[in-house]
Amino acid sequence: MIFSTLQWLLVGGNVSALAVTCVVLLPIGVWIGYDALRRGPILLLETSRGRRRLAFGGKYGREQLLAFVDAVNRDLGYHIEVDDSLR
Image (cartoon, rainbow, N blue to C red; front, top):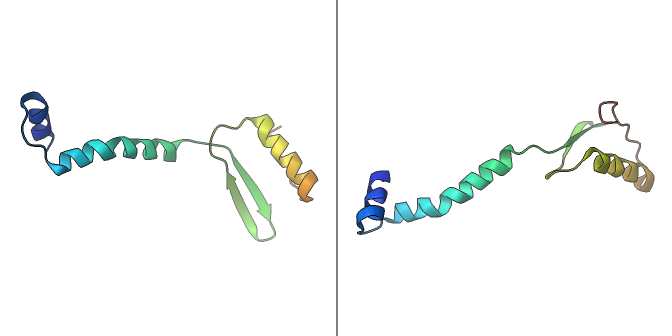
């Protein structure tokens, strides 16, 4: 398939549906793979029902996470302790 696609690019001719599908879906697949492997901050919460993970997508700084925890503690009345590694 790769050879026939290269031949089509250089010489011309018929294009297979498989080649067109690969060209269209390859960038989408690369983007999905990159997004899946990208790391973001995770808050580990220990509750009465066990451990819970809050995963945040995107790039959030330490200050934003601390502000989030403070807002949850203040506004919702939960008591979330912050590990010393975050402060």
